[in-house]
Structures are given as structure tokens and as C-alpha cells.
Image 1 (cartoon, rainbow, N blue to C red):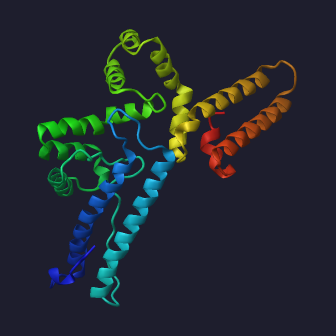
Image 2 (spheres, rainbow, N blue to C red; image 1 turned 30 degrees about the horizontal axis):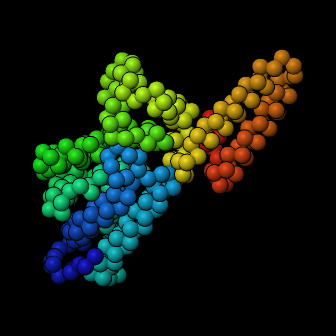
Length: 286
């Protein structure tokens, strides 16, 4: 980022830190938003990046923020040589659990207005998700705001995640979205058809959703979600069979259960290319 110290003559260190931070926060927001576009697919009803891609996005964000922070503080060192004191800190606007919005549909002028409003009103990221929605409501046209909500409404985003592996069409996505307010799935089954409704129901099973959550959390490809859910179910069934067996002491059963947990845990680790230490979160459902 090009920066001219002479643009702020006569400021104290504290004042200059605030000045430098404001300049770099603007650059940081723009770069973070560019990175955030990687998480989205081409259409609002399609699932976005998988866990591995999201992990790479987070690493790229951390590297970028580290570089900008270093550059900002180098400016301070050059102006206040040999003087210790307040430094520039640039906390992330977004994170793995706090995604940035999809803005790919906006013109350059609309995006610039939105970025300016975010900087003017949002404060720190801890303010919550509403600050993004409020910024969009203030500056976007009605048509832009409709598209913004299709992509970035929290319920729509959560539904996209839930439907990973189902790969809905737009009509199917909208039908499922409407069904969330209905008491039963009768109408949805009719709209999707028997075969697609069965596929949808299978992806919504708690075991599958838990597997999806864990794969994302560990930055792993989602293609293994079905295998992971089935393997865990087999592990649970095997462990329950041991405990329900009338023969054998509790001590022997505990030992057998521990062997089963280690065996299934090793199987999952091998398939997902995980080190043993990273398995804790994935083996908790066994």
C-alpha cells in the first residue's frame, strides 16, 4: 500500500497511529472482501467452498493481515525512530465462523459505496452480523438489496451448508427454503418428487449433518461426508453390541470398547489423512 507520511504532519504518535490505522483498515477491508468471494459458488442456491478451500482462504487472510500490519508499523518506526509506544493493530473483519458477504454481483461503484459505509458505521467485527445487513440496506438499490439477501441472508447461507451433497436446482432450493416454515414435508415431497425427496432426507440425517460440520471444522473435503457418517454409525453399533452383551465383565467390555474406538479412529484418520492428534473432534461421536 502506498503511503505518504507527509500527509499527516505535526501529529503526536497516538494521533498518527489512529491516522495510519484508518488508512490500512480501508485497504484491509477491500482485500478481505476480495478473499471472501472465494467461498461462494456461481449461484446463490449452490454450496460454496469445501473445508479444505476455506482453510486455505483463512490462511491467506491471516498472511495478508500480517503483511499489512507489518507495513503499517514500519511506517511508525520510520517516523518515530528509536521510540517505543503504541502500535497499529488490524483485527480481521471476517473469519472462518464470521464469513464476509458475497458481493460479486455489485458494480464497482456500488461496492465502493458499501465498503465506505461499512467502515463508517460497522465499528469492530465484534458488533455482529447485522452491521453488514444494515450497511447494505443503507446504500444498495432495491434490486441490489434483493440479490444481496439471496446470497447473504443468514438463513439462506445456513441452508446452503445443510444442502451440501444434495446439489439442488434453484427451484428445489426455493421449495426447501419455503418448507422451513411449514409443519410437515408433504408439500415438499410433492414438489421434489419421491426420488429427490429421499435424497434430500438422507442428507438431513443428524449423522450426516454432524459429519459435514466436522469436515468443515477440520478443513477437509466434503466428498467423504457419506463415508464418515456410515463409519461412525458402524462404530456406534459395534460399541453398543459390546455393552449389551450379557457375557463378560465390565472391565473386559471397557477394554473391548477402547480397542474398537482406537480401530475406528485409526480408520477415520487414515481415510481423511489426519494426524492422530487432530482426531479428537472427529472421534467424539463414536
